[in-house]
Image 1 (tube, rainbow, N blue to C red):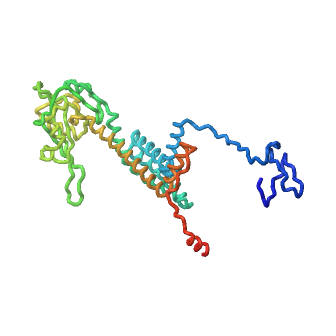
Image 2 (image 1 turned 180 degrees about the vertical axis):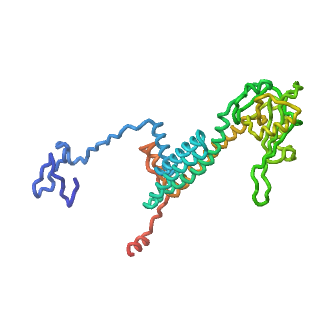
Image 3 (image 1 turned 120 degrees about the horizontal axis):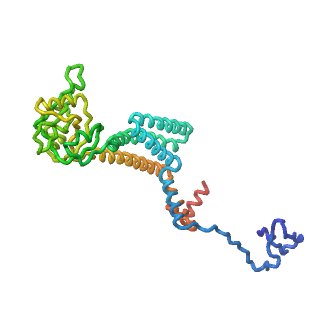
Length: 376
């Protein structure tokens, strides 16, 4: 009830009796109240609102943290664009590994066309704040899918290759029969005899104007044991070079200098017609070879290319994903989403916490300023 002009006014309800006219001091019991309560005491019953029990503290903190992350990186469409970017990358890279890199690019274009059309629809509808993260995800797909897919494809060609370990040089032709490209070889003995080096020069591309060729040079040398004085070759070391096998640039290259190491390890090279011609030039009627003698790329660490491709691929993917999240964070700050993160998360972690004071200090106006503003 309230007092209006000295008269108590109330609403008619159950347990309410209308006072007589003219009786200003008539006691008017409250609806549902105690009729025996002393009206002059001024005591009012206060019903305490029953609050729901709080969730355990770890759950509230996790909820508050997820809420902050959700707001800091662009809300719904920011996270949707990021998840769509990750999904497109996974599908494209998987296709590149198990089929070809070109098919992986086709899968990427399907995802890009989908997100581009959806972002265009949001833009023409006037929701630019929703279209920007989607378009950014579409641009990032070109790097994560094409560049990352290339390195993952290169890694898979090495990771899925065969491995021949602890081989005897004499038994290599029989045990490695039918090996594939980039097969890993480890053997116990032998070194490269560079004195029996052979080469074959192939005109790869002929320039139409000047009439000269771009050559590939197939350089080979036998792998022989120090205790083997026969002229029978059990394995070959080969290098595909773009300069002549007798050129100084080739002789000082890292691949050629490894021939002097006692690595006794290498990667398999599939013998083609051009390699066979280089091997024939190396033998030059002074040596013979065992049927099925393998041809390998002599290297001290045959798994180096595999590890480098794996590391580079993940560095590219995480670098682009991290850069995109950083871009979303900047965008969220510009749109004002980030300003809501701390207050709302603090309220979730502690529902009874008091509201934080405003950072903007309001300076009180003087009486003259108030009068002047009221006059205007």
